[in-house]
Length: 312
Image 1 (cartoon, rainbow, N blue to C red):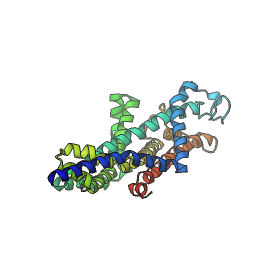
Image 2: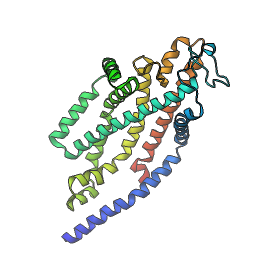
Image 3: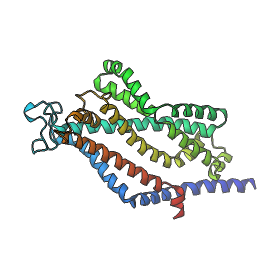
Image 4: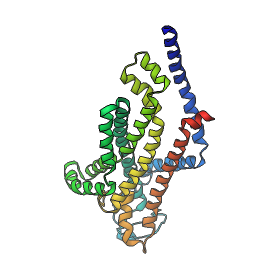
C-alpha cells in the first residue's frame, strides 16, 4: 500500500509538471486575444526601440543651446520643436525616455524582489515569523508614500550627487526609494498564494516523498505563484514611471541637464501659452507608456487566471 501511495504521488507531481506548458500556452492565447493589450504591446515595444536606437539615428546633442531657435514648434530641423534655450526636444525626449523606463524597470525589480522574498518566507514558514513579517508590512503600508518619497529624496539627493555623481546618485536614490515603497502589495499577494498552494495535493505529494523545504518552495510553490507577481510587476513599472515624473515635475528629480519626461514637463510649465508642444510631447509619451503597461497588466491578469484557463 505504501508503494502504491508513493507511486500515485509521483504520478500526481509528474502530471502537474506536464500540464504546466499547456497552461502557459493557453495563457499566451488568451493574452493575444486581448486587443487592447496587443496594441499596448506594440506601442510599448515601439517606445523601447525608439529610446534605445533613436539617439543613434538622431544625433542632435541634448544640451546644445540655440537661442535663435528657442520655443519653435515642430519643423523639419526640429521634429518635436525646441525649448526656451533652443534645445532639440526630440533628442531630449529620446534620452529622457531611457532614464524614465530604466527607473520604472529597476524600481519594479527591487519591489518584486523584496516583496517576493518576504511574502514567500511568510507564507511558507508561517507562525510567529509570518505574524512579524506581516506586521512590518502593515507598518510600511501605513506610511504616506508620496510625502515620504519627497522627504527622502530632498534629504539625501545632494549627498549622493556629490558621492556618486549627478546622474548616478539621483538615479540610485530614486530607484531605491520608489522600489522600497512598492514591495508591500507584492508581499501580501505572494503570501496569499503560498498559503493557498502549500495545502494542494502536488505540494503534499512532494512533501510526502521527502522533498526538502527549499525544493518545495522554489520548484513547486514559487513557479505557481508567478502569475499574479507578473501582473504586479507591470503595475509597479507604470507606478514607478509616474512617481519619477512626479518628482521631476516638482523639481526634486534629475537636474536640468539630465532630461527625463517629467523634468521636461517641469521645465515647460511656465511656457504653456507660448509653446504648448513643449509639454504635449512628454506628457503624451508618459500617458501612452503607462496606459500600454496597464493594458498589458490587465491582459496578463486575465490570461494567467487559472480558473479562466482551466475553465476553457
